[in-house]
Length: 211
Image (tube, rainbow, N blue to C red):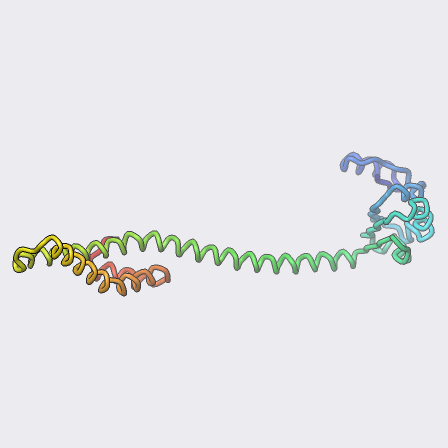
């Protein structure tokens, strides 16, 4: 419901907001129907008085009512706020709420920034992990190829071996390669997990690995 001393202005606003107009001189009667009243006029006196609200509240059977006064000077009598089940908010109250909301949004923004930074770091680590996998796999293959080549080169010197001896030799060779390469591969993985781009490239250069 909208009302104004100018019925024409009230009608224009009602059309814009999809409301209905009520006669300004009958404001006190319509307070009975309103749960929330917003007041903004250029009047120099109180438009909504304590007596008007007390009468309306009585007829509302004490159902709570909210009054928001955004007028300067105030158009709703502050004494109304002393009436039980009636709540009055003015410009100062609204500014306090706005300031509180802004501070809360700033805190939420800071928390959001921390979450975003954490997610970015995890995403970057995931990307580095994708890069690390092929490189570490290539190094492991290179070391195994070297071991296989050396075994092939010296195999004839060992003479004939039984099947069990062949398996034991293979197991000894791969176990030795894995133990020697483990600290190298671990350090390499740590380089990828961090931000040591130069160290990562150094590992590739040392072992002749392609990017």
